[in-house]
Length: 133
Image (tube, rainbow, N blue to C red; front, top):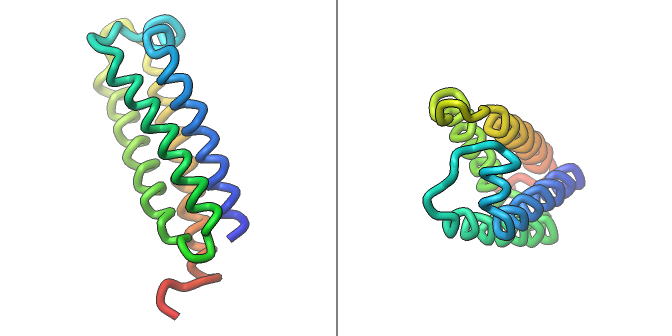
């Protein structure tokens, strides 16, 4: 359970930081720092930032009650896998002409690694505390 708790807390920190940045400076982050074409409406990016912070709070909540709720980590593993897939597909075929793909590859890689760590933690936790005794 210790490994899974550490993974969840690290994942929560990453989501909280990303959410804070997205909620506070979406236009600058997207246009200037990542060199992506401007989005038509930055309100959605701010909303995604707020959602990321709330998601981080849920990860901390699960990590605090991990003995009973360790299996909830499947939802975070699915989130990481889905985010990695969408980011990789966007990097491969969806980047606007002239825009760099590296931010999307970084996002895909980080989420793939975190998802793999979630799965390792889930595997260890399931041996320690099976769902069905």
